[in-house]
Image 1 (cartoon, rainbow, N blue to C red):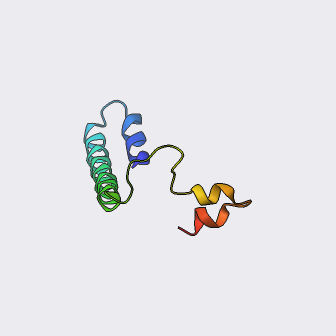
Image 2: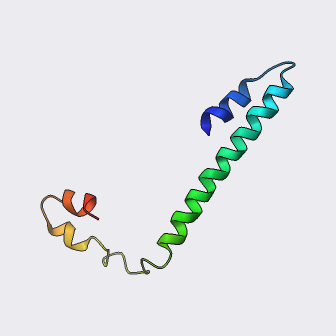
Image 3: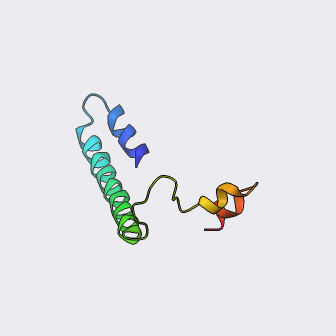
Length: 74
């Protein structure tokens, strides 16, 4: 997505047809990123609840010496 956007920004002069082509491809890629982020947000909706800062989901991990397993083990 970013590559197409930067390519579009760098076209100069009489390259309107190429700029429009790259711009439409970049717009499509932005749409894909938006769909993925919306899907992830919908899947995460309701998985956590608001709590006080000292009542965090990883509170048991804060007492462990190495929290690596808590972070990568989901």
